[in-house]
Image 1: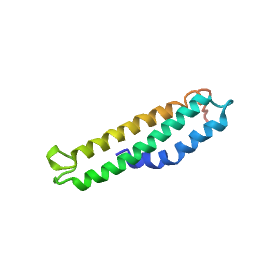
Image 2: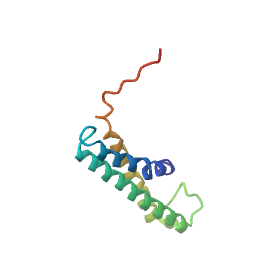
Image 3: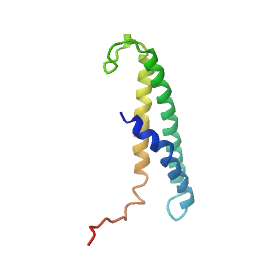
Image 4: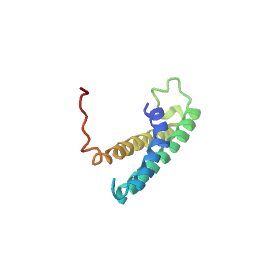
Length: 114
């Protein structure tokens, strides 16, 4: 899943980059954009914690035989759905976070070394 991959980046690099956006104001980005990045980073962190807690609780409540085919009667269904929803919300927020850098990277040119 995306969960392990996002966890390290969301908790560390995205938070630091959001804070750096405030130091880049007014030359690098607007104050509004710095606030947006901080809000997205905080939202991703909250989603990460909720996903972690509900995912573990759902797994503990699961009584089925195949966790890849999780049915309502297997137990922990509501927690499993909550975990999945927050994981996807985190993924979407992270994509929006990455898109906030498009203006800063618009003039970056990559050339083949000679």
